[in-house]
Image (cartoon, rainbow, N blue to C red; front, side, top):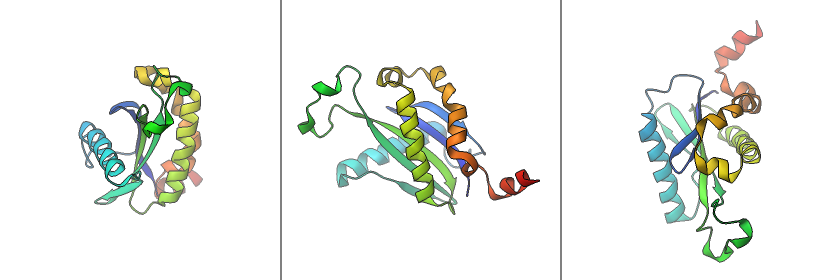
Amino acid sequence: MAILELAILYQNNPLFEKQFYSTSNVLDKKIRNSLLQTISGVINEAFGEEIQSFSLGKYTITVLTHPLGDPDNSPSNLDKSHNNSALKPLMMYCIVDQNSDDKIVLKTMKEAMLQFCNRFSVYDISQNKVKKFKKFDKRLDKIFGDLILKSEDRFKSLF
């Protein structure tokens, strides 16, 4: 089990990306980001559910979305009856080995997303200032811990 790459996107723009192992043979980054946004949107519209993961060859892409308020509207002004129409999703994805435990990866992603949203304001996120989010790098390493290591790398780290 290993996380090869992860990213946090807002409106199809990468806010934070981290690559632990090469994933160049999975999909081009721009195509991958657009594909994930499209698949997530279609699943949400058609079935009213969030996509959690799907497989491509020997990789699994695990996806987590989190509604993010519009920075122009305070939460008190949002009309709840519009079914979150004023909310835009923040998306995190991880590309993992196919033999990874999706539940563990998803649980860890939820923790990372929670900490990301607590660390940065809606305004910061909506401005897409990528340099600001680089500070999250060390915290992300702590959150994911040894999930980012392939089994052979875990074994090497013991010696």
